[in-house]
Amino acid sequence: MSFCPENNDMSLQVKKLVDINVRGKRVFIRADLNVPQDEAGNITEDTRIRASVPTIRHCLDQGAAVMVTSHLGRPVEGNLGPEDTLAPVAVRLGQLLGRSVRLIADWLDGGFTVEPGQVVLLENCRCNIGEKKNDETLSKKMAALCDVYVNDAFGTAHRAEATTHGIARFAPDACAGLLMSAEIDALSRAFDNPKRPLVAIVGGAKVSSKLTILKSLAEKVDQLIVGGGIANTFLLASGKRIGESLAEPDLVKEAHAVMDLMRARGAEVPLPVDVVVADEVSALARANKVSIDEVGPHDRILDIGPKSAAHLAQIVANANVVVWNGPVGVFEHPQFAGGTKMLASAIAHSQAFSVAGGGDTLAAIAKFDIANDVGYISTGGGAFLEFLEGKTLPAIAALKARYRG
Image (cartoon, rainbow, N blue to C red):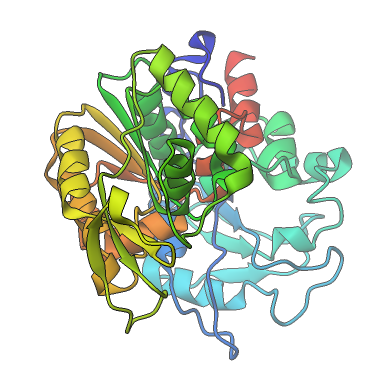
């Protein structure tokens, strides 16, 4: 997925499930049901399953014969171990749908029946040999099972696999499910000719893990807020002392390059003027609020200070679009959570359209209870990050190609 002008209005370039009449048709849904389980195989968190229900229910209500598949864990292709089975998912999905969901083990050759108004769950797709390599023969075999292919797994959109990419090429019809469509619409709204100012917040431990994202956003946004260890590296680049704080001194030049890129566009990277420091990262650590120029040689910067947080909150308040990926401090501990909490509150109270994604970001949203006040919360994980990097997402590219075709 690119930020290039010719790729604008992405939401208009992908066929959507709501635009297709699926009555009486065989529908193959690629969902993301990869949920965490305990050692006994019990599902410990079912958000992804619940997120898949609207698309499945829509197809059932339309009178389609519905097949759903997903990956689970990291199985070895050709081998279905007890930890790889979707059996617990079938039970939970059935509870959410209010009907029995039959699990089909050997499904590639189509030796099973599913009637209109029925739904079956096809066993872990990553156990099929050739899935991860996007094998064409496998893709064609799966495509032959259906009349309509529906991709509703944005979380795997950055992977070119048989169930995310190959089948979309060969199925009679291919479209985005309700969840996938919502992701595309939200990200398109944020980046395709957005209302200005466009503000991005990028936090995290390392510049190296977010460098491509920072460079990509620096070409687009009006304000680029950095937090966590990333901000420490930027502080180093601006000549500040950061004591024993987490940073990457070897990437100071890269941080300079990002700031120069922003400056050349008349934009900026606002850096902390005050910080919260301690001598260790722990629940018992004593937090001290100091000016950025008062950071001691043994201090660790673990959060932004109240003045910096207030300034960033004002930037968010004046924004029209906010993209959030990563906290600005070690928010897991209360004494270092103030900056992230104030930023979360600013996003919640802002009139801006906000998009948030990434594991730590979702954890912060849950902790500060602002889920209902964020414009869109992406379920994408790696796909969301690769979108921010400006990369093409293979699964969406395949749907776009079918739409144009």
